[in-house]
Image (cartoon, rainbow, N blue to C red; front, side, top):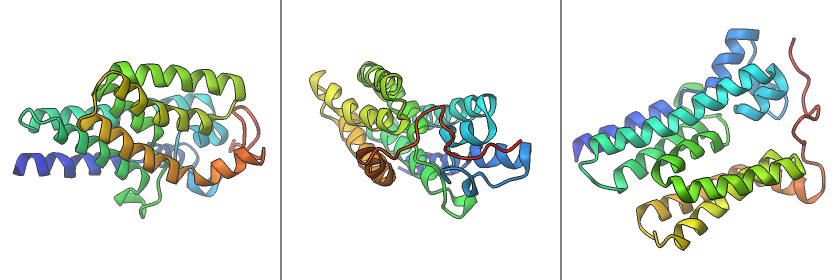
Amino acid sequence: MIPSVIAVIISYLLGSVSFSVLLARLLKGIDIRQHGSGNAGATNTLRILGKGPAILVLVLDVLKGIAAVWLGRWLGNGSEWIPSLCGIAAIIGHNWPLYFRFRGGKGIATTIGVMVTLAFGPALWAGLIAIIAIILTRYVSLGSLLFVGFTPVFLAIAGDTGPYFWTSIIIGVFAFWRHRTNIVKIVHGKENKLGSKGGKRVV
């Protein structure tokens, strides 16, 4: 029991490492949450710092989710719930980071890492739908919501209605809550598109 609790706590602390905030401070001496969309994630990093830093943030945020799940598997004594809870904890840490006054990102990259590690097949199919949507609409937020929306659907189709399914539902609720303003903007056609000048790039 104690190792499992420790694993969840460490996962939250790991998730709280906001690479977008740290990289913006390191490269430009700015708080990225005060620029562009105000979000501490890869998409806003792309707008403010450019492609290289954005790719790095994306990869590191995904790795947070992967690491959290594997930590849960290592210390979870064979339970499917412990790696699931560790994944959720990492996403909570990313969204509400302890080290940065609980102002973080929207957790999609970390969610990708978590769900791909927990349920590769369903997450892959959901990811393909998300990528197609982003290519067609250039709305990253729409693709993100489709990913978290379709992952539990494909899990159910695969016959998995256990811990991973319920984890995907919980994560989906987080994602839709964090994207509530984006949903309104999409409906009204005011959402920033990928590649558009949604924020002034810091040079």
